[in-house]
Length: 338
Image 1 (cartoon, rainbow, N blue to C red):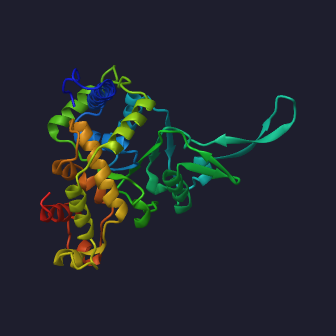
Image 2: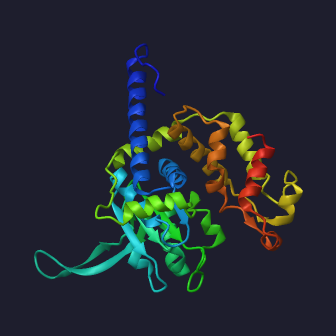
Image 3: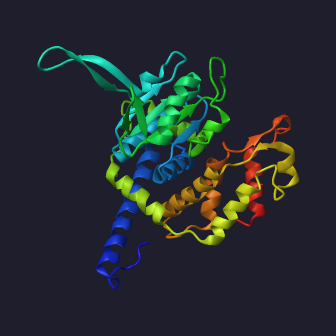
C-alpha cells in the first residue's frame, strides 16, 4: 500500500496517501500500546483487529494480567472517552444505562432529567462482567447489539465509535453468573490473556515498580478510527476465501453431513453464521494491519481462534474427554486447505 502515486489519478493518489497515513498511525498506536502493556503483543494485535472491525471483545485471564491496563492504554492511544463499570452482584441495569432523576431547573422547581450511565462512553471497560446478575448482563449485551439504550420509553443513541471490552476471571466461579452461551456470540472476539514467561515478567516488574509510570501517547483520533473501519469493510475478499470460510463454519455443525466424526461426537452446537461474518471481517482488518490490500489465507488463520473459540460449544463427552476447542478449530481449518 506504499507504491508510488505519481502516475495515479488525483482521487486515487489522495485515497492511497490517506490510507498510508492511517496505517502509519495504527502502527504507532500498536507500538505505543505494546510499550506500556509489556509482553502481550499478540493480545494487543487481536484487540486492535476487533476495534478496526467495530466489534466488542471479551478478555479472559487470571487477575493481575494487565487487562485493565490494556483497556486504559487503548483509550489513550486512540483518544477515546473511557468509561468503567466494576460489575458486582448488586449492580442494577440503571447503574449502567442511566436513569431519570429529579433535577433543579434554572427557572425554579424541578423536572425529570436523564442522568447518563457510564455506558455513554466511546470505550467501556466492563470489569469482571460475570459477577453481575443476568438481568444486568442483558442490559449491557442489548446495548452492545443495538448501539442504543432505552430508558423510560426513550431510545438514546450511544456515542460512535462505541466499544465494550469486558473482562472475565476464569479461575474463580464463586458468586459469579456465567454469560449465557447464546449471548457469548455477541462478542466479536474472545481473547485469552496468557501468563508471561520469566523474561517478560522481569521487564514488567522493572517497568512498573519505579517512580515513572508509562502512558501511551495519542496516535489517532476517534474520527480516524471510524475512517479506518470504513476502509476495512471496503477491502476485497476473493470468493474462494469466502467459500472456504463457509465450509469451515458448516463443518462445525454436528448435524450436518459435511461434519467429521470428531465434530459429531464431541460438539453440542457449532459456530453461528455470525461467526462466519466475524471471521471474514476480522481477516480484512488483519490484512489491513499487515499492509495487504486483500485478504489472504494467513489472515484467516491469524484471527480464527479469537473469532470462533467462544462460538463452538462442546457437549458433555467433549468436556469430559478434555477436547481442546482451539486445536479442533485449527484441524477443521487445515481440512479446508487454509
